[in-house]
Length: 265
Ligand SMILES: [Zn+2]
Image (cartoon, rainbow, N blue to C red; front, side):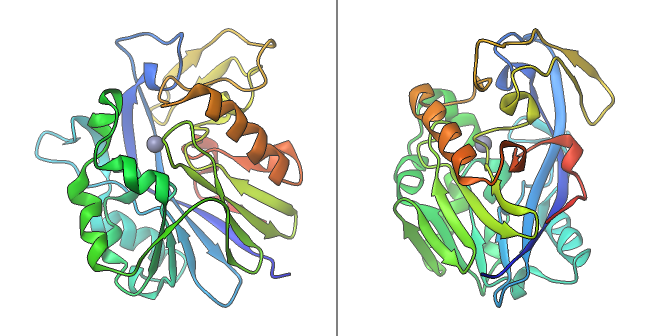
C-alpha cells in the first residue's frame, strides 16, 4: 500500500466565539486558531483536503469573524511551500462546506472535487444555528466543475479513504491515510482541537497567546463542540474515526494550533 506524508499548511488565522469550542466558555471571549489545508503527498496523485477561508474585508472580517491571511494568496503561498499550486492538485476533498473550508475551491480548476452527499444536500439550507458559517456562493459554482458527490465511506486512492463522520455538520468527512507511522485519521471538524479529542486536557493557548482553562471531564470519552448539528451522530463519528486510526493519538483535529507546519507520517 502507498504511504503518504501529510503536510499541515496554515492559510489564515480565524477568530470565533469561545462558545463554538466549549460549552463552558465565556460568552464574550474570542479564540483565535489556524485555518488549515492538508496536503497529502506520496501517491501518484496530488491530494488536498480543504480549500481555505476568504480574505477579510476592510474591517478585518470574513462573514463577521476576524480573519488574518486567507483568500487566494493564503492558498497559493501555502501550496508553494510544498512546491505545488492549486492547478496541479488532482483531488480536492472538502471535509465540509463551512466558510473556512471551501472558500477558494474554485481555484482548483483541474481537480476532481469530492463532497459528501449529505453535506451537499444540507449546505444550501442549513439549520438556523449554522447559517452564519455557510455561504452558498462559495460552493454553488462547483456544479460547473468536476464535482463528485460521494455517499458514505469511499476509497479515494490506494491508502486514502474518505470516512463519513457527521455530527459537526450533516456530512462532515474525515480521511484515513496510510503513513509510515500507521493509519492516520484527519477528523475534518469532527474535532476542532485536542481539547475535543481529550476530555482530560484543561488548558489551551490560542494563536494570540491567550490562555484558556477548562474543567477536566473524565466522565466523557470526547468533549463535544457546541458547534454541531447532531450530538448522537457526533459521538458515533468520534468512535468511528478513532477506530479507523492505528491509535487514538493518530487522530488529528481540524484546527489544532500545535499542528501548524507539521508533517505527519
Ligand atoms: Zn466546521
